[in-house]
Length: 248
Image (cartoon, rainbow, N blue to C red; front, side, top):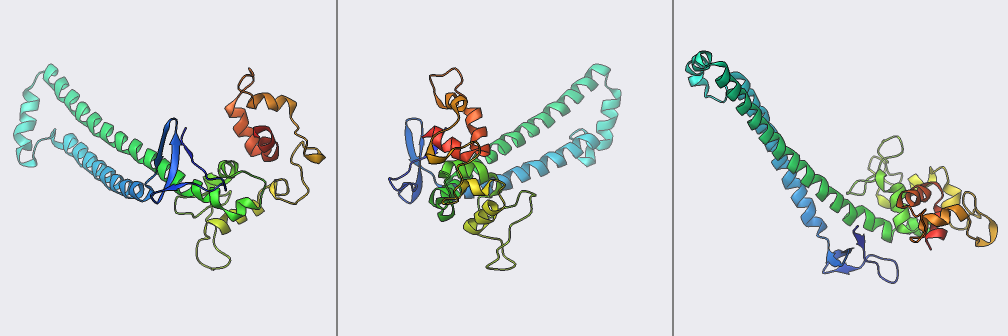
């Protein structure tokens, strides 16, 4: 799984003006601008394929892929065909339709992959350098796991009901990343457990900073039969304080 390369200060390492990513043994810079341009191009290309597929399907249904001027003679030919030939014609229609659908599916897959890459290069990097995140006890990756789904690559965000978050400082405009994140944290049910200096120790926690969760500890031990990335992710959402302690 790809992850950002961070500096000693916890910021994303920038190489040649690009966020640096490590994927296994490979380390490379992500071209967010190029990815955005490619997504726009693929969206347009996919829309073109959809339009062509719709037009082609309509033509096939009406004329069997024959020009309208030849429709009369074509229909007479089909009428004179035996059942075997009619089956061949129908199979040809299905094959052509499947070809178009396959091309559309390939473009959709490519768009989804690039959108995920663009999200990582923009939104995830914002969590890594956010001053709002620094005001909490959440590591940037945990904050991104908890609140990242509320954001779009352009930095705008929606609340838990899916409504756009607007700026209070600039009425009528969408809130920027930091302001939107602050709104999300203010409305987070466990807000007091994630803010620094709140005096909270998190759900199930005890004073003095002692790590709790004997059972949960096995989820983080790769040598334990209870090791589970799924349970770790669940704990990050339900008890981020304990998650941070156990992960450390």
